[in-house]
Amino acid sequence: LEFRRVLFRSGAVSGQVSVTTDGGTAYSAVIFTVLAPAPTINSQSDTPKGLVPASGTVGASVVISGTNLADVYQVSFNGTPASFTYSSGTGKITATVPSGATTGAVSVTSAGGTAVSGTFTVTPSAPTLSSVTPTHALVGVTVTLAGAHLADATSVTFATSGGTTGAVIVSNTDTTISVVVPTGSVNGNITVYTAGGNADRKSTRLNSSHGY
Image 1 (cartoon, helix red, strand yellow):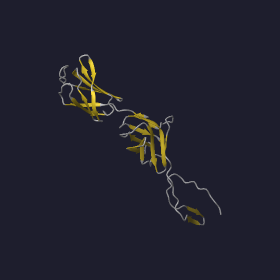
Image 2 (cartoon, one colour):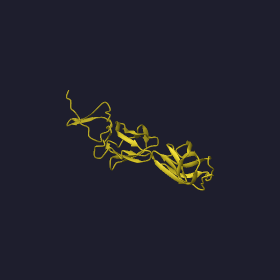
Image 3 (spheres, one colour):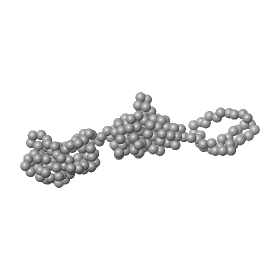
Image 4 (cartoon, helix red, strand yellow):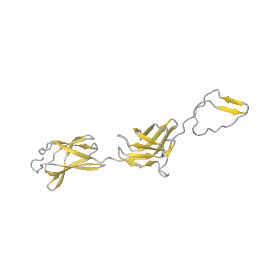
């Protein structure tokens, strides 16, 4: 028997293998399966970098560079699946940092396997405030501030005649935070502080004796 090593070119698909000579063509009795190539993600020292940028908030876009990314069917940020698109023109993936993502590796998965990047840092989103309910209240009354990215609030302050004073946080979610109007509050800003920044909301009809 004579053995020959065959190199399959790019674009080969699963099927029978045929060998052709001057005497004719012979076909393999079994189907040869062409496996998908494993994807890779560039390191941050490569050009282009594997992740651009390498940090961002939930909802931010991240461009992933590497090889064999066309057949990727899942992108995850530290295990949390993300939505993404692939550009055949650039060969790159653009993914959106998903809600619930935490700092860790980004992974891409195709039939050929899974590639894992270096660390992607999920940064806190800056809070926003859109309303205060009720619009008027006395000192000691609980009011609700509505907005976004409020779940990680560390403190809330109300304006006073001499500066600001802290308010007691009763409860908070990502979109609302309930606080008690503190003694000494006057007309001015209500400020929510989080790791991602702070947000102000102008209060109305505040005075030192009655609140707002």
